[in-house]
Length: 86
Image 1 (cartoon, rainbow, N blue to C red):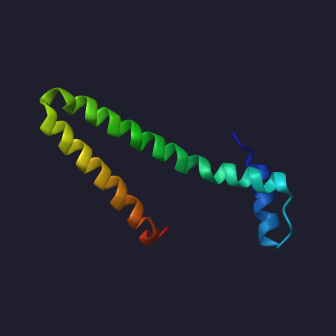
Image 2: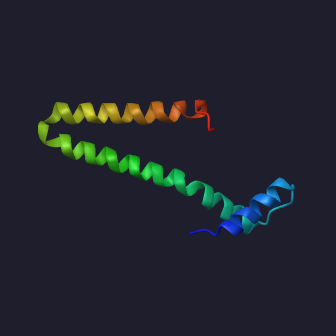
Image 3: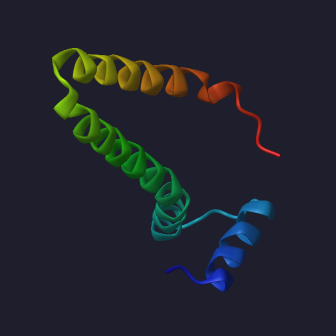
């Protein structure tokens, strides 16, 4: 999707404290945000799949899935600043 030469050139410009053009900044933002967007989409899809699998068990089971999934989403988002990338 994105060329590695283009990415390397952008990173070299950042390391050398050169000013990036608006287009370069936009390309970098899009390139860095795609993995996060895909992760959020797959998480939502899994929530829908969970709800559809449990939905036939009744209202209490469906309510518990809604409670657990919203809590998981909230705690996952709140704890994100504490993750360390290696």
